[in-house]
Picture 1 (spheres, protein in one colour):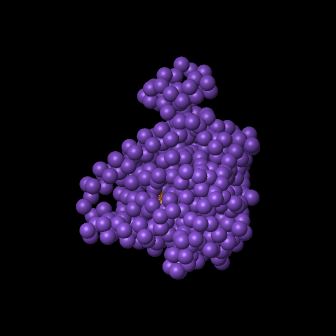
Picture 2 (cartoon, protein in one colour):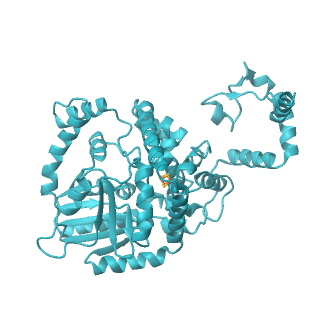
Picture 3 (spheres, helix red, strand yellow):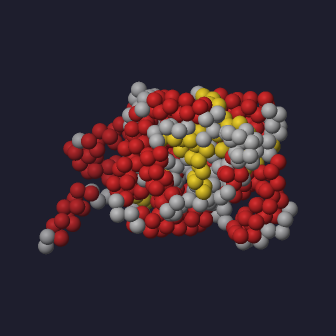
Length: 477
Ligand code: SF4
C-alpha cells in the first residue's frame, strides 16, 4: 500500500523542507482563524447540539457507506456522468490519465483538492506531458515554490507576503510588491488565459450527495467554478468517505464546515454539480467523470476506533488550535495532510510501520477534539495507534524498535499498578544520581537517549504524590 502512495517524506526528514518563517506565519494565521471561528460559533445557541447531529450523520454514513455509494453511483450515472472506482492511488492516477489520453488533453486547470495531493496526480500528469496548473491562489503559490500544502484549507499559510512577492519576482519575472491585493491581481491575470484554453478541469469535492449524485464544492475563490465549467471535460477525484446521504445532512455539515474552517457563516461560493450539461447553451462541461478513491479506506473502515477519522469534513480547526502544529508547521507531518487529523490519518493509510512518528506528534492536550465540528475523538485515536505501535493489533504489527516497545510496556505496567509506580518514583532518583547535572539529565542510555539526544530531561526529584499531599496540607492550613 505505502509503495503505491507517493509523497511521504517522514517526520524526521522534514527540517530540510521547512522554510524559516513557519512559526511566526503559522501562528499569526492560525490565531486569526481561532478568533473568527469562536465569534461565529458564539452566534449559534445550539452549537453543541449541531456538532452532535453532524457527528451522528457522519457516523451513520460510515456505517452504511456501501449503500450510499451504490446510490451515488446510480444517481451520477442517471445524470449523465461516469463513475470510475479506484482501489489504489495508482488506479486513480491511471483512470485520470486514460481519460486525458483518450481525449488528447494537453493542458489541465485544477481546483484545490486534497485527494489529488494524496495520489500525487500532478506529477503523474506532468510525467505524461500534460501541463497542469493549480488555480487556487494558495495552491498556485506553492506550486510555483515546488512545495506541497502545509495546511488543509490554507495551503501557503507558512509563507509571508514578502516571501510570496519574492517568489513571483523570481518565477514570473514581474515587479511584484509585498501587497496581497497586487499579488492576487498578478495571479488572476496569469490564470485567466489558462481557464479559457485548458482542455480539462480537475477538482475534488467537499461532499457528494448520494440522493441526487451531486458534487459539492465549498470555496472562497471563483477558480473552482472556472475549472469545473469552462473546459469541456471535468474530472473529479474524491475519496469514498466524502459521501453524505441527502441534502438535509448536507445543510448541517455546511453550517459546521464554514464556521469551523474560516469563521464564515457561509463561504463565498458553494457550488453544486450534478452531471455534465444537459443541452447546448447550458453552462458546464460536456463530460463529467467521478473517480471514487478507496486507497486503503475500506481497510481502515474495519477498525471501529480508527475509522472515525473518516468523519472528518476537512475544516482544519484542529490544526489551528494544536500547540504542536503551531510550532512545527504542516511539513513536519510528512504527507499531504497535516495537523492532528494528519497524525491520525497518515499512520492508518500508510501503515504505522511507515508513518511511525505521527501518533506521538501530540501532547494529548485534547484541544483538537474540543473544536472538531464532528466530534472526532482525536486523542483516543492517537492512543489507539500508539498501542498498535507498541503491541500490535489485528490491523497492524508492532512498529517500535524492540527496546522502545519494552520500555513502553514497562511504563504501561507501572502506570496501571500504583505500587510499582510508587516504588519506581523512590528508586529512580537514586538510579540516576550519577547522571544528574544541575537538576537535568542530559544523557541517558538507549532507548532514553532518543529523547536526551534532542533535549534534556528534568531530573527525577520530588515525587508527585508527596508534593500533592504537601500542597493539600498547606491549603488546609
Ligand atoms: S478532524 Fe475535525 S477539526 Fe480536524 S479537520 Fe477534521 S473535522 Fe476539522
